[in-house]
Length: 292
Image 1 (cartoon, rainbow, N blue to C red):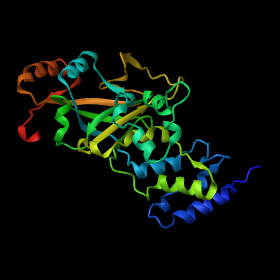
Image 2 (cartoon, rainbow, N blue to C red):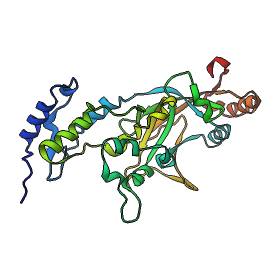
Image 3 (cartoon, helix red, strand yellow):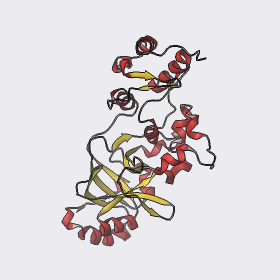
Image 4 (tube, helix red, strand yellow):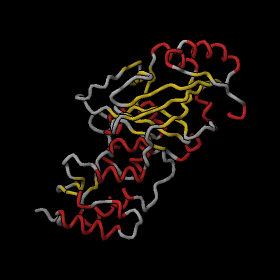
């Protein structure tokens, strides 16, 4: 016999509104969007993801088209010039640094962290299909030169909602965080889990606080199962997708604007590489010591 509290549309809307009215963000949400099964409270499956979009945009504000620095190695610059493309690597490459697990742990998403019969976790499978590119939040590099002696100024334009750019959050998630509050209401008042849409990828924008010096802004692209035609390349243990430079792409358009080098001994080679990309309109600009 099912003894769980009623979770009809009226009850969901009424209780979620009452329980959150103390928070300044409450008025942002349309609680009539919520629906429930015997186990889960989520958003109505009608193609309108406005509730989940509002939630994640509040927690991790999105960035539209942007021009930012990407720090990398000289060898990577050579590869970019040869292939006329830039790689977005799978998040699984950095799982040892708290990727996805930090977010799942903070919000008690134990289903993502519990090993399956084959020993793998759901979160490990998710990490294989999330591809990222790290960008600087500002012009001052701080510790970012440690990633390589070259930095590339990239103009990045997501295609609709098929790619996301957001600032990484490093701090512990506060008690009044909307996702935490919604989970508690769902559990305490309805004896159900709260699972908004997009939760499987939004965790890629949360990292442990000890990495906060990087002040990373991240471009993220998700491959949506086998029906997604995005080509994934494999080199050893590394999975990545290639985005052609200065060309239209169904996920994101990336234009290489300029290159700087912090290593004087590599200046000559960098100049030659940039010259080989003259057809792309790439500029070689001077790096000055105060930019270190």
